[in-house]
Image (cartoon, rainbow, N blue to C red; front, side, top):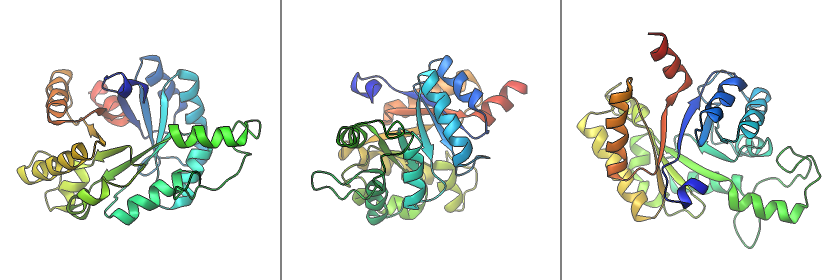
Length: 249
């Protein structure tokens, strides 16, 4: 949020390997955020909390891609100290509303439904002033919605107007697969769908998150600029698996 507020383009990586040290390395080389992938990664809450702790110590912002839209998944990751959630395969306005509600405490007439428990890691193990923590958490934790299906694209104009949605994350790989174009993230139909999502998000003043799929630094520079030119404000430069495989090759 600080980077966005200053006009910078925050850059992060996805972490799918159960390794707090990879998170520490990402912070050490000054990525603004990591997103811990509990949907496709090889870990869940017990390991995620250690990886969130590693992000805290390394000075990078931890977000978690939850494995489903279940409110309990969203709440548990935020209680563990994640500074935001990435919610997979959002297809309707009602799903977007439910995701935001699960991430926010009820306060000032909002529709928050996050469970109120002062004894969490996020609230410093029952040592925080509860009203102050609730206000701080609602203001600072982020909700990113993954759009990765034709249904999500079709309903995007409604989805982006839901209060509390901080960013829309493009999912061109899943989208291409769902459209019968497996692996073809640059197919014209996939690109057209992504551009519709970007246009709707920009119109609603919601940030767009794009993931780079290129394998080499030069290709990544070109892809990075292409996404920035069309309106992406946040970038994910691939996952730990992809980076390690590329380096080993």
